Length: 496
Image (cartoon, rainbow, N blue to C red; front, side, top):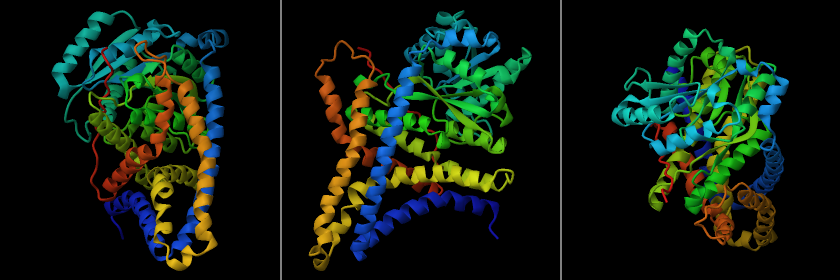
């Protein structure tokens, strides 16, 4: 019999075993049975072309909803349809590490510019005790310059070296939530009326965000059974960022738009909002993992017997790319950011472990949730390699007899035709990248738009080095039990 530790380790190893088995099997088949591999590659490419078309359709659908949502005056609708709207209490959690006052003040300025009254927003800024000098200076500057702008500015300090924690955003937020619970209890607030928004410190909200959020929360029949996920736009410093960073930023935004239109596998990611009652029911965001943003959804889903969902918010929030002072450091930041996101693979063993504890959830629901989580990480690590590198290997390794066959001569043409069809996804992405751009700064010439189109030629290389490889890195660390901590993404904006 396996011990609990051995069983959980087996669950942790499973994603890496399956992903590396796929890659190794592809190489072995290419060398020993190239004909089999050619057939498999053609079948897989046909499947992936259908997935790309499917993606493009949902992306366009979500884009239309996004464009419609940002044109609506949600505050007017909120006041008209829900006269008691002011009973809802909006609280924003902003964890701070070593960010500058310029970044923090920009985030707070966006909150003040909201159509939802800033005087009704409670802003929780939570700094790190391990950055005591920086945190004290930042806190005093925020107090002095922004006092009286919100319902309340609340400051918490996350002490270092608390038990059962890893340093990072999750443990910071967890501590802030427990401290805010005391704040809410002192005022006799009902948790069901508290809408908590957990944001990265560089999150710039759209002016209609909190009006839209409060409207949907008020309209939802059971808001404590739902998280609320906005569109995430990584474009605060997009014009200043290198081409590879822009491509990956657009890719994340398009993936989120696609996911918002498909509610069957929507999970919270990065900045999100939810009922404080739901947070307290599960004890807060996890304090000992890296991917607390997605884990909180699974915590709530399990705690509610599978009766928990994510409601899409088509009003966006904007964040920074991981730009740094040098190109090389920017690329390193991008790699580590992608690896940290791929470390969400830690949700797979968590789900397998918890499934046994929740017999009230049907096996069908468990299977669907697990498949989406597992298939997402498998595709992330493997698909680009299968299409760009491994797909060419059987053609290179084919023997003389196979090289004389009609299949061998036609396969490159078939693959080229399939990839041409798949270009519809690239074309849609390129066009939408121009539509979603922030306003062009005055110091950038108009012909810069041409470079923004040509940058998509870098997509295959970007996907290999800054998508597949970071994911392989993450699952390999988990496979061998070399656990990753939380790395803080450096995000810099030009001061020019």
